[in-house]
Image (cartoon, rainbow, N blue to C red; front, top):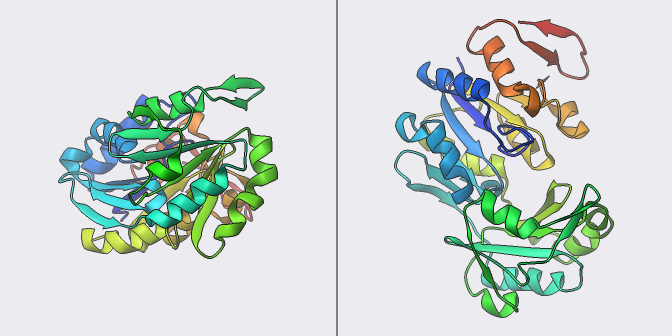
Length: 295
C-alpha cells in the first residue's frame, strides 16, 4: 500500500491558472483518509506552501513541506524543521555579484520579505511584458522590498537565489551564469523563465532521504508526481514516479507512468485508478511501453 504521495506544486498540483481543482483536492483528501500522507515538494518557499497545506488539511492529517527545492523540510502539523541546508553568505554574495552581468531579475527571500533591486523590472513572457516580481510576491505571500545593492545587503544564509528572465535569454546565457559555480552550488531551470541557485548537493530527493525516514516512510511506499527538471530526483527516489502529461520530455521518459496534464486533473486520475480504486481514468504506461491502461 502507498503511504506517501509526493507532489510538486506549479505545473503539477496546480493547473495553469494556479488553481487546486475540486477533483484533485477531493482525491487527495480521500487518499489521506485512507492513511496516505502528503508531501508538498517545491521550489517555493514555506510561505508559498502553507496555504495549500491548509486547504489539503495537512495540519490535521500530518505530512511534510519540502521548500526551496529541498533546502528546508518542515512537519506540516507541528511546524518543526526536520532538515535545512542553505548557501553560505559568501556563496550568495558571489552569485549576486555575477548576476549583475546579465539582463535578469534577481530575487532573494528572507522571512516574510522578498528583496530585489527593481520592483518594476519586467521580463518578456509569451510575447508580452510580465511583472515577475509582483507575480512571485503574490504567489508566495511575500512583502516586497527594493534594495539597490543586494550584494552589500545579503549578510544572511539564503536557501535559494531565484533568477528570472525572458526564456530565450535565459536559455542563451544559463551556462555562462552557472559556470563560476560548477561543483560549488546547484543550479537549474525550474521553469522556462526561472533559473535557481541552491546549496551544493540539495535537491528534492536529498531532502526526502534526510527527513522521510524520521516520518516513517520508505521510498518503495511513495508515489511522486512532477512535471519539470527539478522533479527528476524525486521521481527517481520514489517507488513509483509519475510524470504529468505536460511534463518535459526527459521526465516523461524517466517516469514509471505518465498521467494526464495538470489541466486535466492528472493527479486525481492516477489516484482514482491506482490508489482509490475509482473508475473512469486513463493512465499512460511508461513511454517505452505506450499501451493505454483503462481504469
